[in-house]
Image 1 (cartoon, helix red, strand yellow):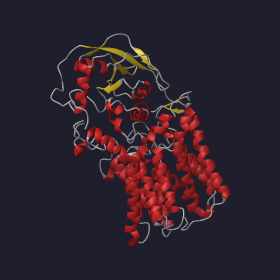
Image 2 (tube, one colour):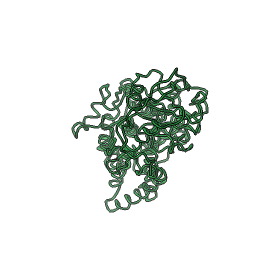
Image 3 (cartoon, rainbow, N blue to C red):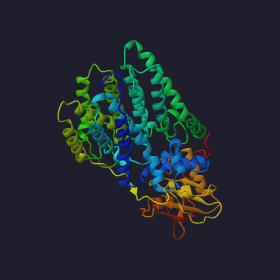
Image 4 (cartoon, rainbow, N blue to C red):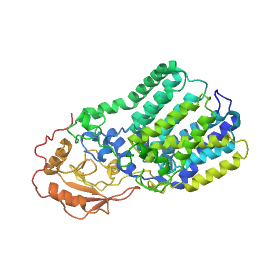
Amino acid sequence: MVDAATHTPPSLRRWSLALAIGVPVACWLRLGQDANWDLRNYHLYNPHAWLHGRYTTDIAAAQQQTWHNPLLDVPLYLLSAAPGWIAGLWLLLPFVLALACLLRLHAHLLGPRASAGGQVALALLATTGAAAYPTLGTSLNDAFVAAGVLAAGWVLLRGGAPRGRDWLVAGALLGGVTGLKLTAAPYCLALALAAAVAGPVRGAPARLAWLALGGVLGFALTFAWWGWTVYRLHGSPVFPYLNAWFQSPDALPRELADSRFRPAGVVDALAIPLRLLQSSTRYSELVLRDPRLLLGLLAGAFLAWRHRRAAATWPLAAFFCAGLALWAGMYGIYRYVLPLEMLACLFVVLALDTLPRGRGVLLALATLAIFAFTVQPDWGRVRFGPRFASAAWPALPPGTLVVIATGEPVAYAAIGLPDDIALVSARNNFMFPARCTRLQARVEQQLRTHPGPMYLLRPPAGDDVDRALLADGYGLELAGACGTVGSGLGTLSLCPLRRDPRPTLCAATAATPGR
C-alpha cells in the first residue's frame, strides 16, 4: 500500500466505473424485483403515512417499525407506480456508489501495481457476499450505509494526510446516513477510533472535533426533524425504542432490542468469523455462510504487518476491528455488516495483489473458491412488474375502519387506501390486547365504539389467530365472505366484521392521543 495520492490511469478509472455498474446490474437482473418482508411492512407504508398525514389516524399499522425515519424511502415510494425495473435501479444505486468507492480505494492504495484483474476480482467478491448479493436492489437500505462508510473512507484516503475539512465531510456522511438508518451508529464510533490513530497524537483532538462536528451536523440534517415529529406524537424522539429511558405511555417501558443474534460474551464474539464458516441461522433469520470476514481479518493482519509504516494501515485496521466488535455487541445481524464485508474483500485482494508472481491465477482461484463456498439468503423477490407496487381495494363505505391483527407484513396495502379510512392494528410485534399501553387503549376504544363498518385485513392463508384474538379480546367476529386486496406483492383478504360486546380490557388506561 502507498502513503500518498497516486495517479490512477484514465483507462483504469473507466474500467472501475464499468465494473461498479456492470457487475451489480447483471446480478440484480438475475435476482428480480424486491419483495422482502420489510418492504411489505414499512418501507412503502412509512413514507405514504407521512406524506398523507396518516400518523394521526392510523395506529401501529407497520408494527414497531411504523416510526422509523421515512425520508430514505420517499424516493422509492414516489417511484412505486413506475415499472419495477425503474424503482429497482434507484434501490441499486447506493450499492453501485459503494462499489465504485471500494474500487477507487483499491486503485489508490496499490498505486502503480493496481491491475484490471484485481479490480474484477474485487468487484465479484464484494457483490456476491452473503450480505451484499441478497440485498442488491432491495429496500433493506443497508447499501446506503455501505455507500456512506466507503465514501467517507475515500474522502479520507484519496489524498495525503486528511485535513480538517476531510474529517468534517467524512463525519457528515456517516452522521447523515445514521440519521436515515440508525443501525449505522457502530460505524460512527469506529470512525472515531480510526481518527484517533490516523496521525500524530497531538493532532487527535482536532481530528475528533472536526469529525464530531460533521457527524452532529449530518445527523441533525437527516434525523432532527423526524425525532421532533415523533416526540410530539409520543413523547420520545426514538419511539418505541429505548422506552425504558423515555417512558412514553404509548409503549411498554422496555428497550425493544433484538438480542437473538448478539454474542453471549467476548469469546462468543471472537468466534463469529469462524462460525460464519458453517451454514446456520445464528446471525440471520435465514441460512447463510460466508468466509469473507475471517479472510478479511487474516488478510488485514498480513497487510498491517507488511505495510505497518503506511499511513492508511492503522486507521483502516482500527476501523475494521472496532466496527466488527461494535456490530457484534449491538446487533449481530449479518446484513448490517455489509460495509465490513466489502472492506474484507478489499483486504483479501490487496493481500493477493502484493504477491510477486502468479497473483492473477491466485486472484481467480480465490474468487471462485469464496463464491462457491458462500451461501446467500433469499429475502424475497418477484418478477419485474409493470408497477413496482400497488394495492387495488374494493369500494368501501364512508366511515370504514380497517383492522389488522397479524404479525405478517400487510401495511403496504395502505398505499391504495383512501386517506379518510383509518388503518389500526390490534395485534402485531408491538401491539397486543391487555398490554394496556395508551395506544392499545386507543385501539380498544375504537374497536368498541366505531359507528361505521369495520373490515379485517389479513393474509389469505392465515391460521385464524387474528380471528380468535379479535373475538376473545374485542368481541369482533367475521360477518360474511371475504373480498380481496390485490397487488404485485401478493393478494390479501378483506373480511367484514361485526361487533359482539365483550368486557373492556384496558379501561384504566387513558385513551387520549399522543402529546
